[in-house]
Length: 459
Image 1: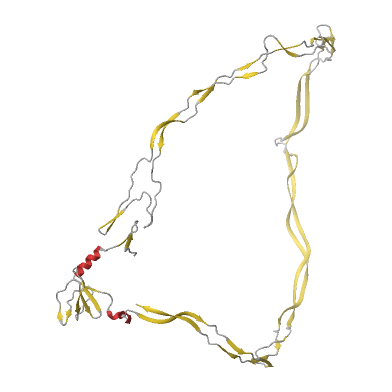
Image 2: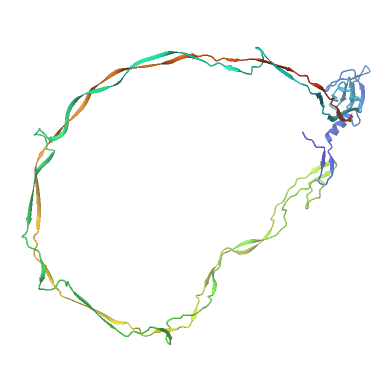
């Protein structure tokens, strides 16, 4: 677990931490004085025990806090809890350096090893070959051609490749052909024949004619239209100014209208702010650094006591305000009607020659039209007379009862060699024995180490 032994404050001062409880315990052990060595006990003392030590064959029954005794290779101190406390490992566990202030030795910790070199001389290698059935190499040879051994085989079978099929039919009779029924008592299903009688009632026939007759004319079929035009002498029409009441004002000026507020816009009251100095940011400075502006002291040291203070803050309005009226909506405006000022001019034209009247006259001969009486039938009566008959029919169809296939049997024979075996091919070659020898000679140089001697001191 991390521990704290010193405290450095923002002002740069560093304080050692004093453990008051530990000092009190040490003071209680030593009785306010130094630890006192009392001797070597021949009686065993144990850590946490309360044994009476024996010094020079005399038992010590009075024990004081801070008494220090040796037993064997161990040290024991008497505490305020009336218990012995072992001070570390037994002395027998200490090594030879435990009784020395320092130890020195030399060593060569680093350096380089030279790269060895090989020095030799070339030699000749002789390789020989000799035929040997037990040789270690067979470089060449031949593979025998395999042979196939088999026997002939014939397969024979029969089949019927062609023929004819005969079919035996029987005939049944049903109702398909439609004709009059032989049952005279059957109800008639249609009336195939008869006669239609038409009776006509008419008035006396007269020829219808259209001709002229005396009396009031009913239409005028033909004639002519005469148009008569009367006109004055044509003149050019011009427009010019003259005195009198003005008929139009061609030019002038428009006076600027007067704009005024018709309805005031809406307003509301808000608080007008006034600036105030407030804290905007919080900064920190490292111990010993220049103190920041408006620094807050949150610690104090008195009588070796480091005190940290709680930091807080107060609240309040950051600005002060006063009520003002502001506009929240547009006003409505109106303007007077603009006035136009101009100079009137009277316009007149000269006389324009136009026709005064148009007269159209139609002349024709009227006629009266009449017709004679037309004979037309009043009614038509038609009557159908026929004889009803019942219908029946017959039909015929063919039905296959049985069929027979007739063919001619033929024989098929297939012959060939279908079974056998292939002989195992063999390889025939000559083995040779490869042999040779060589002797390498030379020497490898002895590598050397180059380093720097250093001294180790243990204290």
